[in-house]
Amino acid sequence: MTTDKMSFRLTSMRWLGLFLACMSQFGSYYCYDNPQALQVGFQEKIGLSDLEYNALYSIYSFPNIILPLVGGLIIDKMGVRIGTFCFTFILIIGQGVFMLGCSLELYWLMLVGRFVYGLGGECLCVSQSVVISQWFKAKELALALGLNITVSRLGSSANSAITPIIYKMQTESSNAWLNSHPFFVPTFTGFVFCVLSWLSGLAMIYMD
Image (cartoon, helix red, strand yellow):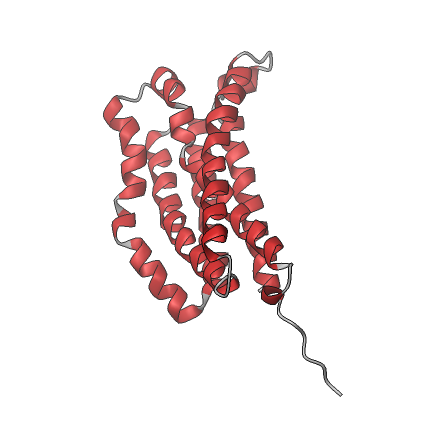
């Protein structure tokens, strides 16, 4: 005799699913504003002009005029689970390249990292909106979407509060290597948050 299992979407476990969906975007928003928190350091240590600094955001934004449409098609064709897995993993790669570029103070590599990061950032927003809509389509949808945006913005706020402190501590460190690579730990922290977002996405995929 077989028994039907009730979907997590129909139980109170949907709130855990919402938490995981929110956390999968926390790292994305945390790293998106990494350049903002490190602007002074980039311009003083690497010597970036205002134009070069702004390009770190432009190279993320320009592809995303079109990419969310492409991401939507990918999700429609391949499913939201594959989309979430791929988009969060792209964030890890992009932040890793950006971290390497910052540590080596190679501007072109920083741009490459931001470009790759942009390939997953906004598409992830699309996939998470789909997930939340599926889990809360019967009720509490507006609340769930609102909480998702709130947690995402907490990622940006956390970056603005934490990253400058980490950067300051590293520039004042007695460790010669850390002192000579002041951008490593701040950007590595973002990398860790991206990995946590990816793991949250995997957990959500399992629940779904």
